[in-house]
Length: 153
Length: 153
Length: 153
Length: 153
Image (tube, rainbow over all chains, first blue to last red):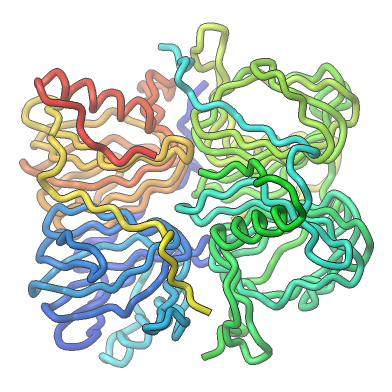
């Protein structure tokens, strides 16, 4: 019995310089690496500058965050994500991201939707695989660049 | 090398009569079999009567439906789910369930949230693993029964 | 904000008579409904006859079983799956299926591989999304039928 | 309707210095951050030194790799993972890791099992959430340290 066959799927690599950064304000940046819309999966990379905030949101699926440099935190928790930090955000968790240091680089592997909430817990907007991909394309094309080659399945 | 070890997790069985049915109106019924809240997973079983409707909703994760008896459909699609039907609902899909025949029995394995939408596509309410479990407990206890032994992890 | 858009994915229905049964011996049957090979997902439906056995196997991902008729069990556990039974098999669980009653119908939603084990726990063979799909195609075509329209993604 | 409730799960952070490194030979290191054994999920962090190899293996579920520093590759593919590289390895993919530069740091989010293969494609051993956790505990305790506080669920 061999488990090797020529039709097996192969791994897909996206190098650091292969996709452009979208400017999301004040020098903070977004890159969308992969979406698997039917699964609800979206994987993004961010470079945040100090003071950048992501509005309070509730996750409908689990999320993992891997921080390569800088410092950021959720306002609701005390700990600070720094270079080498691992973060697990279960489905149902609610929090508000704020960046502490410039050039904070984080990968987020996200399942489901971000339900953005107002102060009373009402939904103001929703971000998911489809909307983040459309937004990234739009931002990049507005920067005069061609549509980037995100791993879309 | 043996792959058998005494600490391996074991399968969990819930027989047809082990959990009570919650009355959800006009003879339609709900049973919550399993929740894994941190994953966003909830598995329910329904018996619907003809005319029962589930409001228009958008899924934030994938869903599978297995129909054991009866007939039901989504208003947005032509096909009818009957005994032996398999249904795959990708994340992002939107639809409105309506039951056609009495005693329609369906299992739904659901990841993420149901975002219930009004006619303009605005979110009116959200159902997820935590809320469906709390609702099931409440209904069963209101029927004078003890809290049921759902597989909660 | 509307969450309805024309590009959203739609649900896929496979009715009871849309895919052919593959004969897997002594009147037992297999149907492959869906594979998502890159996720490791495979969903099958079986009709087992009394005495049918599936060799001892270990799962590398979680599995769910929904039984619509008949009776079957795992030799390692006492309970019997009957019409209306729900079964959750965590990753890592090991067991040996044996069918008790004729015309036992079960859906299995399977993530990962079945590692088939000998009596000492050594791996004898592996079944996964790719191999079950190839096997189903081969059996159906050997029965003189065209390649079935499995939901393959 | 508020989506904020006091019982919601919270995010779990593991800082760079919170878990000890296990020595896996010649200065290469392993840290197990999280296991969810019933899902088949294991998340590890590695520091590899140049020349370190991981035997040829086939994945039964999807895997993601996030590289923070250094350089490594799969022998089967040409591209090199460097700081900022994203890697997606679908279920079914087969490859052999080799490290090119010292102090190569990578996070791997792994679903399912690594089926380690010999040159003919036969399985020689299996690594999964349970075995990697047990191995990490054993290595750390052999280094005279207490059992580390891995996120085990």
